[in-house]
Length: 64
Image 1 (cartoon, rainbow, N blue to C red):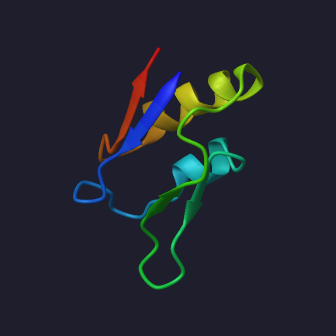
Image 2: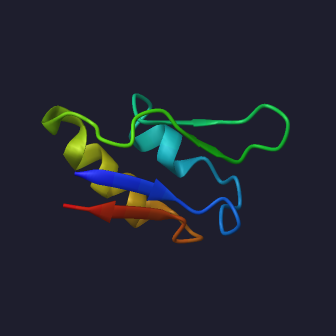
């Protein structure tokens, strides 16, 4: 799995951080997503898929 994020689309809702805190974080200054691991281990894949599905701005891309 490989993850990308589109900062231009991110609205800072934070659903990704709640769903997959080992993979996503938020910047302190504006709340936009920070990708901590673009190629997470298999144990995080379910949470990453959930984070992408929950993102209201569709800012998370997941390639299997």
